[in-house]
Structures are given as structure tokens and as C-alpha cells.
Image 1: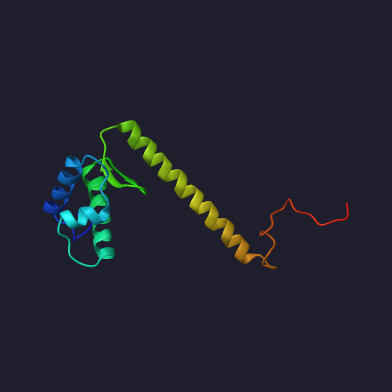
Image 2: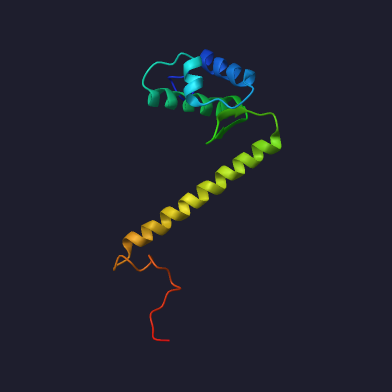
Amino acid sequence: MSNPNITTEEAARCLRLLKAADKPMTAALIAARLYLSGSRETQRRHVRALIKHLRDECGTHIIATLWGGYFLTDDLQLWRDYNEGRSITAKRIFAEVHKRKRMLQDRTGQGFLFGQRMSVGLG
């Protein structure tokens, strides 16, 4: 296993929880049902590691949403759309980081702030 803190039994219990759920489950709810110890943040990280393990090692199609939490799907098209959306979001983040890095490296500090379209003139 890639994460030594995750046991096979824990991963199996998490998978059973997600299979039995009739709606998405938040990380806090999953942690409570699995009786995970630690602070809320530690529990959330542990659930994320469990989900990653189930996706990577077991090949399950678990989708994470901002509005509802995690849910298991058998719909391959939904899974493909979800992964494509994740990759597009990642590309946008990388582009934004690159743009901000260029803004920081600009000699005057404001060259890219207003973009190239703006011009100052009388007419």
C-alpha cells in the first residue's frame, strides 16, 4: 500500500460505506462512521488518503464534489467527465500560477496588472 497508515480493513469498510450510501458523504461523516481518531483536519486528511487509495489501488470510481462530499459511481461517462473536469481545473491553476509569477517578476511590478490592451493617450 502506498500509505502505511491505511489498512486493508479500513479501505474495505470505507468502500462498503460508500456503496451503501444513497447520497454523497462528507469527509467528516465518513470519519465518524469509521471511528477515526484525531482532530477534524487529521480525520479529513485520513479520509482523503483512503479515497486516494481506493481510486489508485482498487480502481473504484469515487467522485468528490464541493457541495456534497464523496460518492461512488458505476457510470463510466460520469467518471470520465469528472476526471476531464479535474484536468481542466489543474491546467487553469497552472496557467494562473504562471501568470502571477510573471507579474511578480515584472520590473515595475505593474506591467501585467492592467494587461496589454490598455493605453494612455489623448485621443
